Amino acid sequence: GDSVTQTEGQVALSEEDFLTIHCNYSASGYPTLFWYVQYPGEGPQLLFRASRDKEKGSSRGFEATYDKGTTSFHLRKASVQESDSAVYYCALRASSSFSKLVFGQGTSLSVVP
Amino acid sequence: GGIITQTPKFLIGQEGQKLTLKCQQNFNHDTMYWYRQDSGKGLRLIYYSITENDLQKGDLSEGYDASREKKSSFSLTVTSAQKNEMAVFLCASHGQNNQAPLFGEGTRLSVL
Image 1 (cartoon, rainbow over the protein chains, first blue to last red):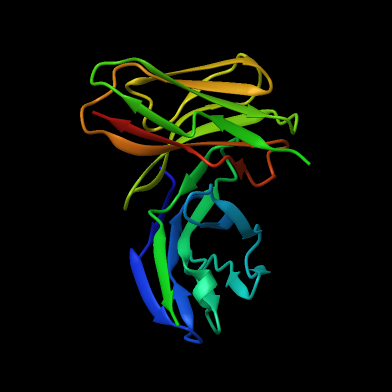
Image 2 (cartoon, each protein chain N blue to C red):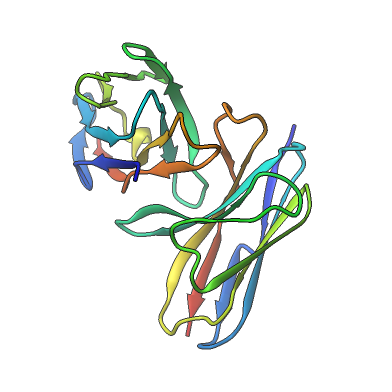
């Protein structure tokens, strides 16, 4: 079945560090890919999404590029802030399946001043 | 603006008890979901519904029932709570299929 793999379970950085969270997927065709962010006590909220190969999604300084060749959608930010501390989820919606959204395991980001 | 409301925010149950979680949305969305969130395991789909009175099982449906009697509401029942169970249950919804789901704030379950 369709799946999403996030390599990092936890990431600890200092402010102004560069962030990469790896996301690889397995699905046929061209799934839509998403990044969500979840702050403590809240539900996940959409950062951005991408639907086509080489499409770049971006929001709040975060960005990711859809790469069908490597089946990846890695999240990057050039300079993290303490306020970016949260859990980040990569997700996909398969092109062949109605509605169902599949999530990765999540990556907990902690940024210290 | 619209909102997804989950009740209760916190739920404490006893082993073997039947527990019901509720979700209401005022976006007039067709599709609604229930996800379970456990630390280190991400979000796992329990049930979803693409319209009123429709129910579709997710990967984690065993031990749960769901109900979608109105377009705006989607309920989840834990049929027999497991001792020491702790999880967050998240409700989500979207309109057209290409929209990104919006999430509620979750119901935090603890079973004694």
